[in-house]
Length: 387
Image 1: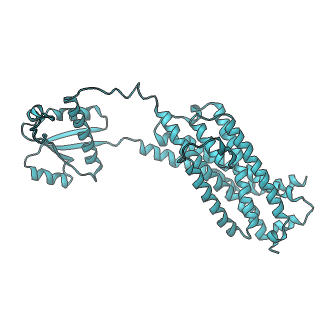
Image 2 (image 1 turned 90 degrees about the vertical axis):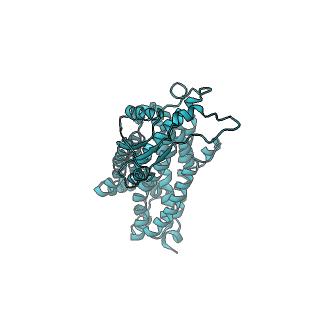
Image 3 (image 1 turned 90 degrees about the horizontal axis):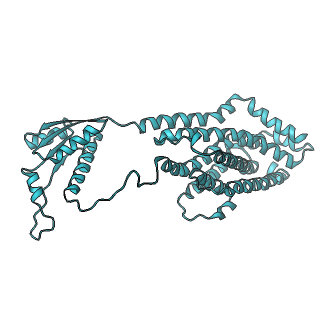
C-alpha cells in the first residue's frame, strides 16, 4: 500500500501541473511541425529562368534546349552574345545567366577530330562563363555540362551500359528506410533522455535538496518501495514524452525526405510492436540511470551537470554504432546500444525477431539492478545526508 501511495504522489505531481504535461507533449508536436515545413521547402523544386548569351553555333545546343523544354521548372531565353567581352560583363553583373561560346566550325571540327590519331591536335573546346555563387547560373552550368557530356559520348558510342529503372532493385522507400535507420534511433534516444531529465531530476534531487525526501525516509517504507515508487511513475510519465517525440519524427520523416514512405502504412504491425517494446525497455533504464545520478547529487544543479555527461556519452555511442561495421549479436548484452541496433534493424526490415525482445528483457534486467542500487543509496546516510 505504501508503494501505491508513493506512486500516486508522483503521478499527481505530474498530472496536476499542466506545464509538465505540455513539456512532455510539445517536443513531438514541434518536431513534426518543423520537419514537415523543412521537408516542404527542401523538396520543392526551384524555378529557373535562364537567359543565355550564345556565341557561335552547334547542333549540340539543341539538346540543351530540349532538356530545358522537358523540365517543368525551367525556361530558356537565348540571345546573340555579340562582342565577347561585353557579354562577359553582362554575366558578371547578373544581367545574363551564362555565356556559351562555340568556336567557328565547331561541329565540323568535332566530326574531323580523331582522339587516337598519332598527330592529333587539341580537341575542339566549348567555353561557358557563369557564376558558381548564383544558384540559377550554377544550375544552367550543370545542365549544360551534363547534356554536352552525354552528347560527346553518343558521338563515339562503342557500347551501352544499361541501368536505371528495372536494373536498380532499391526504390526510394528502401533508401529512405536506410537513412531513417541511422537517424531515428539516435534522435529517439536524445528525445527520451530529455523527457526523462525534465521529470526525474526534480523528483529525486529536487526533493533531496528541499528536504522532503528525508521525510519519506524516516517512515517505515522500504527503501526498495521508495525506489520503485519513483522509477515506475517517472518511467510512465517519461514514456509519454518519448512516444510523442518518436511519433513526431516518424510521421514527419517522409515529408522531410520527399518519399512516399508512410510510417503508418510502411511497416507491419510486428515492427510497431517491437519499436514500442524497445521504448518500454529504454525509458525505465534511462530513468533509473538518471535516478542513480540524481540520488547521488546534492542538488538539482549538480545532478543536471552529471546527467548531461551521461547523456552526451549515450548520444556518442548511439551515433557511433552507425559507423561500426560487422556488429554481431553480442551487442544485445550492452544496455541502450542493444535497443539502438535493434531499432535500426527494424527500420531496415532486417531484424531477427528474437533480438528486439531480448534487448527489452536485458534492459529491464539492468533497470532492476539499478533500482537495487538506488535502494542501497537511499539507505546510505553519507549519500543522503552527507554524513
